[in-house]
Length: 328
Image (cartoon, rainbow, N blue to C red; front, side, top):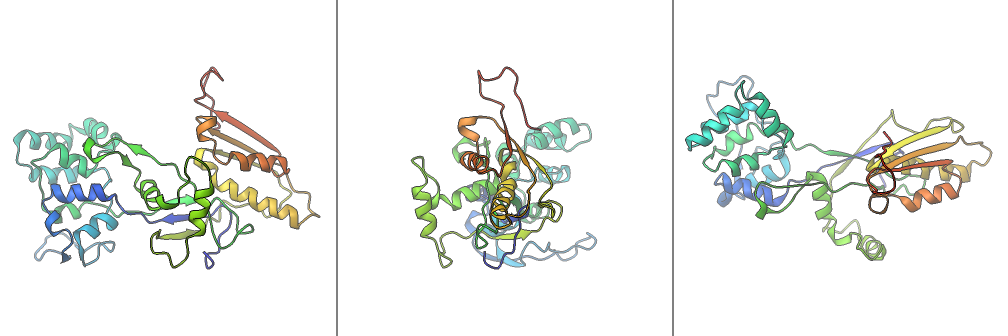
């Protein structure tokens, strides 16, 4: 990251891939698995009546179906009603067809909100639930949005190390309609977790993690995570270091404040003539023993006088408080 000039408060955009298992299942349901790796040309159908029809910029005009479903389109996006209408056209079973028509009808709006939007139903969920639905792959691609980058706050300061930056994420898990496929994880967090498996922290401590990181190099082709810097001009340390700060961050939301505190700690060492303002941090999570991110770092910031006050709230620790308390 030598050419990335970041500051505390900035974020990075992580460009993920869709899960291989889900991509495989979608291609199988669409009866395209046998030609998933064949290079195809993508173009607008001749004679189309749609105004200003064009191939979206995020879909290459010459590529493979596997590449498109893995890296270009968001296969987890809740299908819109117009998409359900298209799916119903290519559904052979009368009962399944009727169900899809109900979901996309005006009368079925409440059911659509509950069954599709709130339940985070995906294209794969629908193809599994309605096995007689088998639309042409081109109709699917017309309605899948772009796979967007996910933003993560930078949890480090360039004053400590300007050649690397840190992020923190929480691995989200969701049930799948088809249990044999396994658990469904957040697209980006699941991909990050899978991509970094060789150097992940094991239960016995940090030694293996540090060893794994030290063995990596810029020429290592085993782990590649595309990212780009997102400057955040409205979320930075004040230019006047004498101003007091109140920081509030539940869970992984505390990540940018680690960068703030690291920055302030080094500034205090190098700018001894300044009377720095107090910093109060409010941090909350569910369980003290399981979710207390950066515990040792916070304690050191307090001991070193960087943090003036540290307020903690653990909402799910049974027996320690009668009513759950939250920091925001």
